[in-house]
Image (cartoon, rainbow, N blue to C red):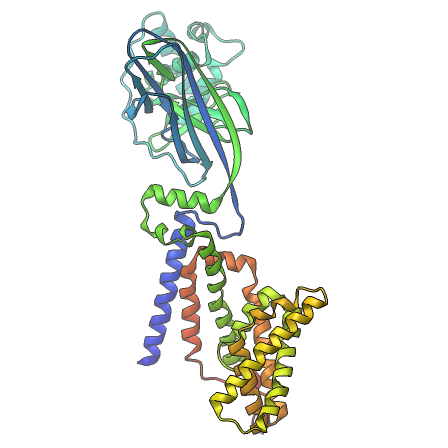
Length: 506
C-alpha cells in the first residue's frame, strides 16, 4: 500500500507541475529560452485640425480584431480632452470631446502590438447581406458579371478571386468598365467589389490597415478585401485577387466608414508613424497575464524586487543539486560526508569558479585535518573539539584571503564564501573515519564528496536550466517526484556490482 501511495503521490506531483508549466508557457507565453525577445511595434496616429467656435468631438477608428497580433498597451494623448471608448460598425472607436478649444489642435493615439501566430479573429459569423439597391445601368452590369463569375467558380474563395481578376483586367468588357468608372480611389474600388459580392449574397467588407515594416514616419493606410466563406473571414488583395494578408499587416478598422470624424473642426489630417523595437518576452507575458486577470501571474518571481530575484535565482538551483546528489549516491553509490555538504560547496564554487574552488576546498580540508590531528592529543570533549576546529577553519580562511591579497589575486578572497560550519564538520567526520576505518576510506569519502560537489556545480551552473527553474518554479514539483521515487529504490548501486561479482560468477 505504501508503494502505491508513493507512485500516486509522485504522479500527482508530475501532473500538477507539468500542467502549470504548460499553462504558463503555452497560454501566458512565458519563454522557455533565456533572453528571448519579441518584436514589438508602436503605431502612433496623429489627428490635426483647426478648432471651431463651439464644442469639439473627435471619433477615431482603432484596432479591434487583428489576426496575428495582440495588443500590449494603448494610450490616448491629448490636452484637456475627455476620452472614452465605444463600439461601432467598423470596430472600436476612440472618442475625444472638449467644450471649447482655440487654434490648431493635435490629438494622438498610440498602440503597441506584438506578433502572435496563435491570435485568431474571433468575429461572429455575419448574416447574408441584404440585396443592395443598384440603379440602372449599373444593376444590369452587376447581374451580368455575377452570372459570368458564377460559371467560372465553385466556392466563395474562387468566386472572389475570379471577380477581382475580371475587375482588374487591363482590357475590361463594357460592364466592368462601367463599374470601374465610379471608383476613383482604391477604397471606392473595394466598396464596388463588396457591393457586387453582396448582390451575389456573399458577406464582404473592406479592411484597412498598415504594414509594420521597421520605422516609418508617414505610414500609409492600405485597403484589403475581407470575405466570409461561411466559417471564417478570408482576405484578398483587391488589386491582384491573391488570398491572405501581407506580412505584418495590422488591421486598423473595417467597413466603408471614414477613419476619423471631427465634429466642430476643419482641415482634418491624420498621419501614422511606426516604430519597431524588441522587448523581453517575460515582460510581455507578465503584461498579458495582468490584462487577462490571471491570478497565477501574481506568484511569478519576476514580480519580486530585483535583489530578491537574485537571491532566489541561486536558492532555486539547490533542489537541482540535491537531485544530482540523490542520483549519484542512491544509484551510482558514491560515498560522501553528510547529505547537503556537497550541494553547499557547489554553491560556493559558483563564486570561486570550479578550478580554484576545488583547490581552496582541498587546501582548507588538508590544513584543517592536520590541525585536527594535533587537537586529538589534547583529548578534548566533542563540543569543545568542534568549536576549536571551527575557530581554526575561520583563521585558515582569513589567512588564505590575506595571502591572496598580498599576492595580488582575488581568487583567495572568495574563500570566505565556503560554509565554514560545513567545512568544520567535514574535517571532524573525515578525521573520525580516518581513525575508525583507515586513511583510504576517509580519502575516498572526501573525494566522493568533492566529485558530487563538482557534478552539482556543473548542473546548477547551466544558464538555460537556471532560467527554466526561475521562470517555471512549478517544475520543482517534478524534481520532488523524482526524489520521492528514488527514495523507494532498493536495488543495487552501480559501484556495488564489483562487490557481488564473485556471486555472479559462481
